[in-house]
Image 1 (cartoon, rainbow, N blue to C red):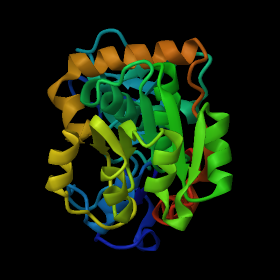
Image 2: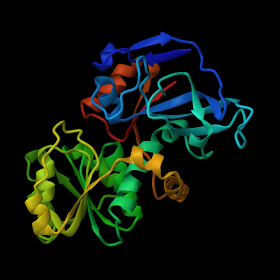
Image 3: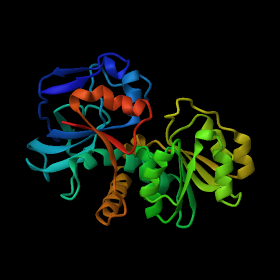
Image 4: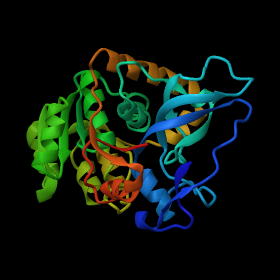
Length: 324
């Protein structure tokens, strides 16, 4: 079977597409023929050696998958050959077949495409955990979402609206903001001119946003700290802007606000029952039409470098998916 392999840290162009042995079944697991694998910013960091976890070489990138079960271990109940499934592994999904712990599988709804299923686990899982558990977002509160047209940002826009918030979408171009508007954003801010703080205050009668969802970091984080409301919560989701900012503790004191970390990977491992409940609620939102995940770009497996660079160069709108 074919798989994309990372044999040393570097650029997407340094990866290779190779024929490797198919995985062997083991107790408690199933084998899935992958139909689609979504790309996330951690995939870019992982192949560069900049992510929190560093798999042993060689490894395949791609943390999310959807596909069809082709083999089931004898000790596994509840899953059968032919089941359409999706889930996340952390890495390894840029491959035609993967071996997956049966507990990591979720059933793909018939109304959900393989591309959408491949891309829903990390973005919506992260954003719902952030807004529900970490921010305790309440109906009627104002939610500011940075990077609002990217994978996690667009998910936060949709989930924030579904949770009853007034959503201000912020992005670096009018084209990206149009996507956020279509996803339900109430107000739009183009921060390419560096005026995020002033624009947020203008839209909130100088009060600021109750919750700020920041997957960008860099210079924009400092502006977030200056336009968060009293008792507000600033969610630290990632640093796609490249620079990890310093936290101005004087502003935390003056605003009586919170700066809250969002590490979804650890949460899903430490609190699997809470994560399962979150996903049941996310899937209910999908079935009710409250969320409609956007697939912004699709690539063939042979175009893996272009797919990864789409994230690395911050060109992604919605989810980027590799089809197998």
